Each structure stands twice: as C-alpha cells, then as structure tokens.
Image (cartoon, rainbow, N blue to C red; front, side, top):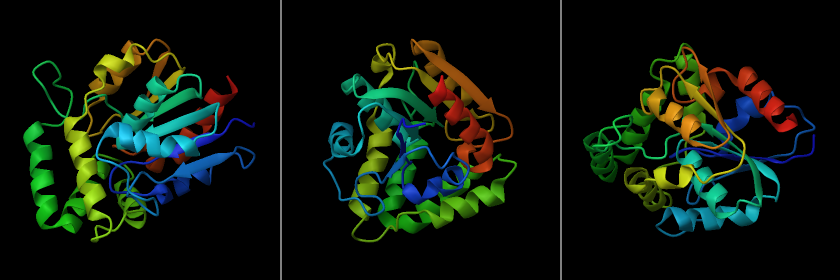
Length: 244
C-alpha cells in the first residue's frame, strides 16, 4: 500500500489531531500530516484560500489521496480542482462547499453565528477556540474523548498565530466553492457525523450527489469529528478506498 495519504486538519487545530486515526492505520501506508498555514509549526501564507492551497501544494506528493476535514476539506476541494492530475482521490470529513447560510444554501451555519465568532475572537481568542471545540463534539456519543483529543491538538491563540487564525475564520465565512464541485473528477468519499451541529448532514449529501464520483458514509451518533469518535471505522474506510 504505497499511495501516500495527506491529512489536512481543520481551523484552530494542528496535524496532531490525526493521532488517534493514524494509530489505527496500516503502518505500511505512507501518511503525510500537514499543518495548515499559520497553524501548528507551519509558516503563515497569504490571505486567500488560493494562497493557503499554494503553500500546501509543494508538500503533497503526486498521486496522493488527500483527506480534508472542515477547513481542510475546503482546501482539499480547491487543490483537487487546481491540480486534478496530481491528486488521485479525495476524502472529505465534516465538509461543506460553503460554511455559512445563504438564501439558496440553508444547510450551513448562520452567517451571524460565524460573524459573532469572528468578533469574539478579536477580544478573547482562547475562549472562542474553547467554544469551537465544544461545538465540534456536541451530539457525539464519545463527546468527552473528542473534546480531550481536540484540546491536545489546538494551535495556541498567541500573538504569533492569531493573525492566521483570524484569517482562517474569514475564509470559512467568505468561501463558496459550490461552482467547483461538479467539475471535480477524482473519486471522493464523504464522511460525516449524523449529529454534526456545525455542518448539517444535508451539506454532505449535496456534495455526494453533486460530485461526479462521490459516495457518502454517515456515522451515527457522531459529531463534527467522526475520525476522533470512530477512528477504527474511519481507518478501515480509508484503507478500503485507497485499495479500490
């Protein structure tokens, strides 16, 4: 099993969040966990989703399967559209092409809610991270374990990281990639928690229906991070998908 597996985490976290999943993957599988720009130990990039994707691209081996979670899924979609010959497969977890609601897109977070997150982040970034972690675990049958795993993988909201974290929240608020989805030809697995309170399951259903080669798996009693509450099941699905 030589196909590299690239892991892109979500907002405010770091590549350390994948540790429970990585522990259950076949050791023979090459895994490349990347920190998003300005997160973990990664240097900041520019202010656009394209800038962030460009910063990640040199670290993604050709022929990779790219796994993106939340904001990482937004980047995975963008990369797949811009480098269709380099990225072989996609796995989108807790994903949506648009994170905030619009008149024609109800299956998302209310724009006012994310706007309040952004305003509060400027005042008390650590408190916003804590609230965001709680929302990601809400409704999950393994809520305490998910909160603990997320808490150990946070990017510190200190002066060095705060600008990139604020930029990440803006990207979540402003990005709309619905127009790209029908043109993404890579085989794609969409993994979603049935109890995800940040991204309704309807967004994942839309992705699976619109992607030319998309397939959806919904994990019952899981929230926004099913790879943390169901790591063994997610590992089995990933390995099966790569072998297909």
